[in-house]
Length: 353
Image (cartoon, rainbow, N blue to C red):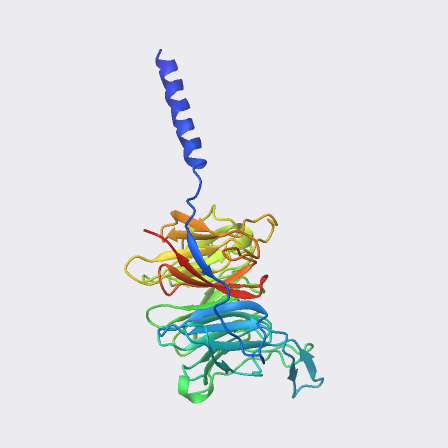
């Protein structure tokens, strides 16, 4: 009888675990505005690699337009596809273009706006991270673009005088990026760059662009990455890194010490953490590395990894997504989503209790 009781208890526990595992993730109802942005006739929206908002609600889009740019001052000038950074007001009306024909704009990867309303772009193929002030003037450069397709990048010596001197940046050859993907900041203003596709690491700089440390390498162990596609930092300074090939988000402290990981949310790529007393983590499952049948949804999570719900699926209709590369979540229930596959930015309002 005692053996039978243990068997029944084990069977009951197993049934409970299976029921828990099969519990579906709640669907969050949303309203979508896929045609909010009004581009001028002279600029066509291409792949929407990055989208971000500032404190006034203005919207910034870093898009791969194919606008040709000529690289000069090299042994062999060449033309390449370009990218453009465009600003809109909160109603979607065009305001201005920033950094037109910039040397650092080649293949848009991300745009972010920091707490001081400075605008930061990450360009994948120039391997540069550039900060613009709210007026659109360049303030800080991190990384260095190769002078030609055949000439490797040389070390970039930081200019004296900090931010105001002459666009300081990473100083050693080892500090140069190889196809970076994202940028974020902690409360002290330290800068974290996801040097994610070529180097599979995270690099940390102080607020003036002085290199502090780096962590990560290619692999599957804790602290290693298949790639680092997106990063976000919470109010406590924890760093969340999307590791899509390993199907997880890894969490570190600000010094790069591994803390935990979040899984069972597909292949996470674009990340965003909302502000406020109760922060939420948003993660896209729209950029699968080895799962072509990925559902294309966006997950909403607590910072401890608890999945609160999801919305969207792969597709081209409103409320559907085509390869999400960027999420802006300055508000808990109002998001802007940049899509590479559908060449658009959708404003998303979550209808939550």
